Image 1 (cartoon, one colour):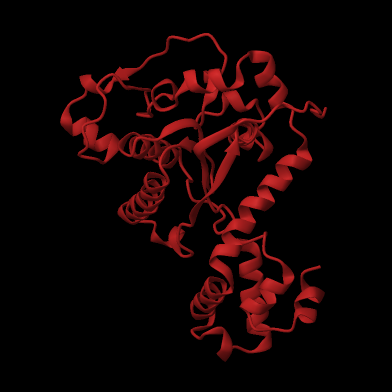
Image 2: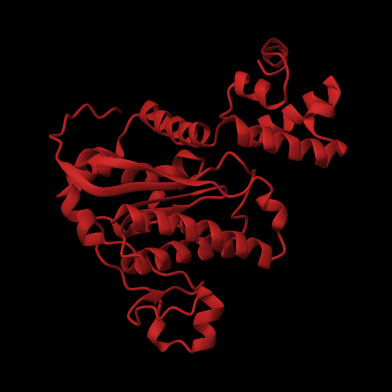
Length: 299
């Protein structure tokens, strides 16, 4: 089913879709605890930098969050997400997950229709990535928060936690809102970290919200490609060549320029596995090979 409704568009100010690059790793947030940490970190940083959160989700390889705030605060949010996640994976003894670094970027949202589309894109991400149930059942996202009756669930107030418990769960010395609620796994609930009233005002009605849920698969694919292209455009060939050199050193102890043709092909296969969004020409430049050779291998 495709939605063909043409909604009237109105400009919005300082709205952003912030996301990490999920093509650089096969898995990053590999355990439920990893996902809880990332969700909580987004909530805490958004609160610290006065960002309104419209939607968030943490997947195995990446995250999405739709926010509204000053551009300089969004930049601080991105910088601290990268810093804190890097520290987390090193602290938990898994620095190998960071071999390509954590790439975080954003795109500016220009109007209310685009804002609703980005919220739905983040919300639907688990289902469109293969989650076998409805996106509202996915544990590490907005869940059943949008246009549902409020449900009572087992939760604890942060204000009722000891200082040791707060630091163990949230890894911060910041004084968090005492009325925030967390579930049994220590995850800050969506009703505390997401501005649900703002989301409901934006969509206006359940009917309009549901109409946006029926976006075309083609639109979702275009959004995926757009996210990937943002990283490739901004980081470019220099970073890809550096990544190729690192893989050459890891596999053969030498940079790509010192490798044989067969060895370069092995490096290319690793890069292709890590970054399915690479074009053949980009891959050829990264491993210093003729595009025709790469085309014959990766067809």
